[in-house]
Length: 95
Image (cartoon, rainbow, N blue to C red; front, side, top):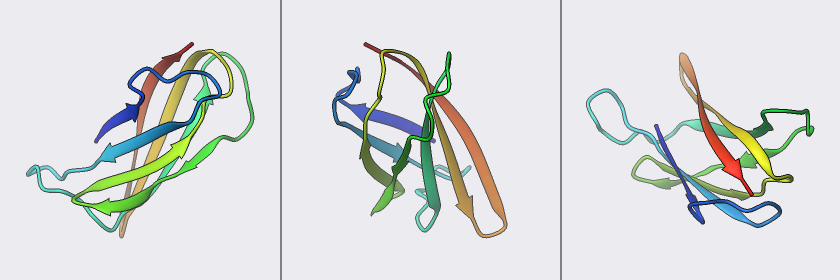
């Protein structure tokens, strides 16, 4: 999994586009997954902040959300396919 954001350095309370690229062990794109992205502040509970990611083909999943406070954040991504699921965490410093 590879996660990118637009803008590359997200700002607090600004719209951020998240693009997740999923490939299998052979490097082939993975389509048809159920994907969720939860934005979790590392230092305090900010309540639920889920970004819906939709498939755009070629193993890419996109959605828009926002960080609600400056600081350290974890983007917790869960990918579910029939018979398996995987969790991966990406870290962001938001100002």
